[in-house]
Amino acid sequence: MSQPTNPQYDAGDGYARNMNGHPVDLEFGSSARDKAFPKNAPRPLRLKDRVVRITWSWFPCTMSTGGLANLLNEQPYTFTGLKTIGKIFFILNIILFLTFTALIIARFTMKPRAFSTSLHHPSESFFFGAFWVSIALILTGAQSYGGPETGPWFTTAMRVVFWIYYACEMVVAVTQYHIIFETERLDISEALPGWILPAYPFLVTGMLAAKVAGSQPQWSAVQIIVAGLMGQGLGWMLALFIYAVYLSRLIQHKLPDASKRPGMFIAVGPTAFTCGGLIALGTQAKSALPDDFLSTPSIPAGELWSGMSVAAGLFIWLMAIWFSALSAISVLRAVRRMEFSLSWWALVFPNVGLALATINVGNTLSSRGIKIFGSALTVVLVIVWFICAAFHIRAIIRRDLLAVGKDLDVEHVNKQHDRKAEKQRD
Image (cartoon, rainbow, N blue to C red; front, side, top):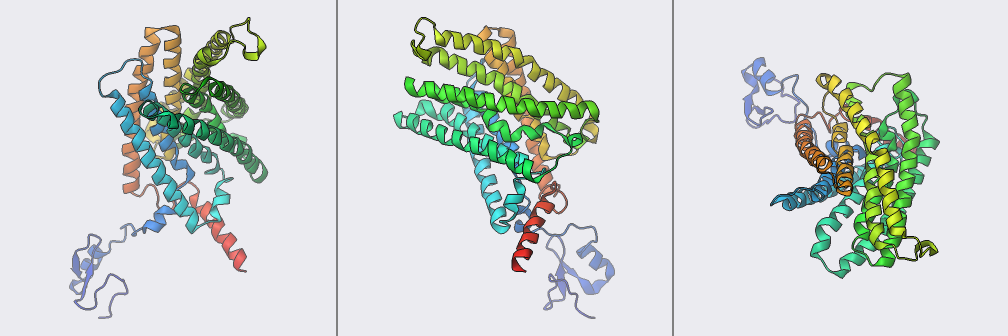
């Protein structure tokens, strides 16, 4: 009998190894061969084959984890161990972020020309903003959990890092949209709130600035608060433009497919984080702004800023709740047709912003009912986070992620690398 060509065949003892690594006698008959190598058995995937399928759309996972860590730190009603739980989520988020970053660097090291394509391809490019939002949330968590435990050096370090991050997010917001506008022609009938993601780093700037300013000397705190307000304004205005496109799609065309409906929750974030950011900045301005701010010593600028921030935040707070309710109904009506995708993480992160905004509103208005609502929403989000994490891990194990044909358009992005490499060789 001719020897099988399968590389797992051992010519020395006439045995092959089945999918479980157990020896099977191929000379025993065809049934033994079928058991050894069943036709429907998944092909082994090398680590390299899986790494090249890591995309920017994995970073909403770290957005959700980091956001939850910060949300746990802001709870109006606490219990023993809550801070510890928050720190666990914070540390876990750092580990996940470093892991995903290392993997995506490995991907672009193996396929360097795919990097430029990933910055404009519709399935990946918008999620590049998620990478930067994750950094902002790590910085916010570092200030929340690390600030009280460190010395003056940490205050200086956070001030420097804040301005570096601010410059980076400005570059991202400008260049990301420019690249997309120049290279892609997007169909309005496919518009999704995910188109807002390049502006998302600025949408969380208000809360980051308020958190960092709280530990800074007055002159630095004022600068950071002003920068935070301007950044929040830029993010909000860009989001408004995309809102118009998204709502036009919902009016003129049908709702997104079932698998994409969790992504509808991304629309909650801009209003929620702007509401929470404005109120947080106003709270800091109340104590940080000097009496002669804007050369008007007769006007209590800090008190005025704080009052206007509360009014502006309340003005848009219900809009965040409206988007969340609309998205929830749309998801529930399609839940039986939904399979896990990375867009499930949108169930968590944008609603973290809503919970933070709700808690800020409750604290400002001294409303026990609103604060309870914020805490209840936090409990729900923790449960949803564990559900998403379980399905995410399950999808990796079952090869529903990081496998051939399973990751949204990553094959096309990677093939662009191969085509560019071939042209260069020619």
